Image 1 (cartoon, rainbow, N blue to C red):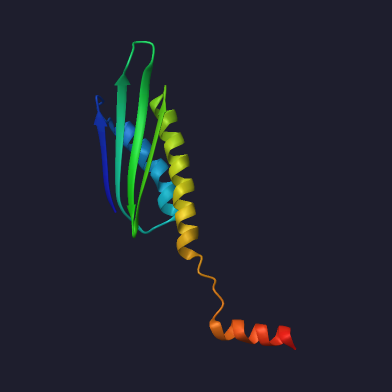
Image 2: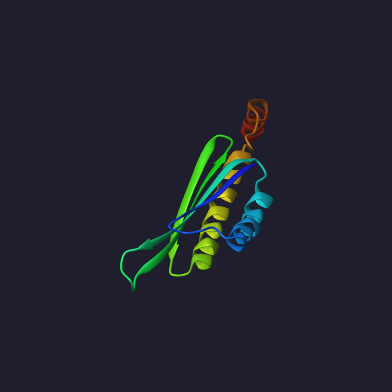
Length: 117
């Protein structure tokens, strides 16, 4: 798994990097076929009162790219919300990939024959 953590108008400190890694472990624990992860942490200065901390992640798994972004007043809270959203989307993708509970044609024909009798 390739991991890139970068900051925009922000220096990514070792504590921030470690926090993102620990939160990302939850996602990789649920779905281990992650190819590439890019995390972007941003500080937007719209007004002095309204400083927004923004976190984005672009996750590439086999067959799909998942993009999630959140904004909050606190960067750590934005990362928490980001990982919650990402975890839900990854679990949903995993369910879609693993749901192939189709009955075979032979079995369907046998069941239809039993119903007719």
